[in-house]
Length: 224
Ligand SMILES: *Cc1c(COP(=O)(O)O)cnc(C)c1O
Image (cartoon, rainbow, N blue to C red; front, side, top):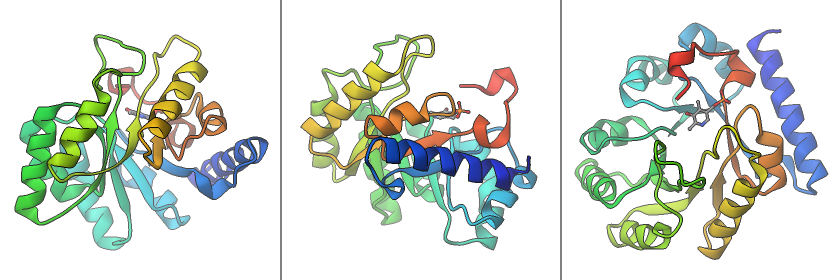
């Protein structure tokens, strides 16, 4: 199968999941996660008309996306991985949406970077939905306060994002994130990856982040 075939297959599975949940396919945006993959793997998706892409590291994204974007200016680039405050400036310069805002110090750093660059990027708050010590994300209890702090700093918060614990059934975590998003009256829910995106769509995801189902498996060290 070519990359374009895999893109069509994922889009068809998304449409079927949306239909089963009585939603329309366009309710959920597909973010093609390109970490560890380079221009030769990415270009066929752009050629097939895909425009939303996700990366989890600023430095890796800086190495490949400026050239791809020079050829296709209407790409939307999503930062989906943990962000260090000292990388806020390059992140704001390169990305269009940031899914991983998870602490007050990062809110401050991003607000400063956006002010300096006169940009206002939509952001999502990442929630540590499974309360896992090794994982990024704000605790469930602290999320309303982080939302208030982000808004007070002038950030345009559009939704919540989470990655459920790898070894557990994801549905209860997706349902919880959807409920939190609804309670906070936010429009976007970023949840669902290659192994569980149909369940995520069923439970209300508006953005699925899919890598291996489009590009094949990654080297183990780069899974995070
Ligand atoms: C890598 C990654 C994905 C995509 O994972 P796949 O299982 O390859 O679809 C989604 N979200 C985040 C935050 C990631 O780091």
